[in-house]
Each structure stands twice: as structure tokens, then as C-alpha cells.
Length: 156
Image: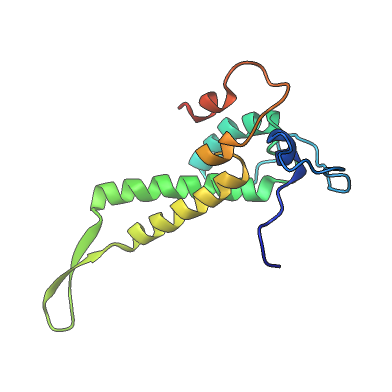
């Protein structure tokens, strides 16, 4: 199917329904906004990120009981990114190897490309959960306390 992907009705509501759609989300599934069960295959960094973000996103209605797979992928990609960054910091972005002619060549480490792919994946999943500046700017959360939930979300 070509064209823009449809925006879920909860995001339409949070955005103030700018297109004034009638019967918004009338037949759309509405899973419960509860923290989903955490998969056991997440590593320690991903578990910490899950525990940090999941309650906040659930409170905003952006994470539901059925979102555990994309959310798990997001936090595990985050963990992979952190580990790749530490590896590159320790070993450098390039390495020297000898080519078939016996000459020394400096080559970019595969981990650099893996890191770039992780960052792209993280960005894509962050957009899905309203975790980027542009996607956050379009969200209005009715009924949430005056505290800035998003500032708290990104504080470490």
C-alpha cells in the first residue's frame, strides 16, 4: 500500500485531531495502557532502559500491553548502541590490515557500520513511541499533571 501510513487515533487525539476526523478510531483496537511483560532475552542495559521508560510511556498512553515486541526491540537496540560505542571508544573507528599485495590499509571497523544501523533503527522506533523532538512536538497529553513528563523521561 502506497502513501503515508495512517496515524493511530490515540496520537490523533493527543495532537488535537488537527484533521477534524469524525468517528476517530471508532473501529480501531484499543489495547490497555499497561506496562507489558518484559521479555527475558533483554540484556542488563536494555532491562534498565525498559524499567526507566515503560512506566512513563504507559502513563502517557503511548505503550500498551501488546507493544512489548517493538518496545523490546527499541531498548535492545539502545543497549547494542551503547555497547558498540564502548567498543569503538576502546578500539578506534579504524584498524590497519595487510592487503593481498602486502600493503597496509586502514579500514573502517564493521562495528562503525553496525552502530550507524543501530542509530537508524533506534530513531525509527523512537518516532513510533513519541520519543523524538519532532514527534513529541505534535503530542498534547490531556489530563497529565503540570510536570513535564518528557523532560523527566530523558533525564538520566
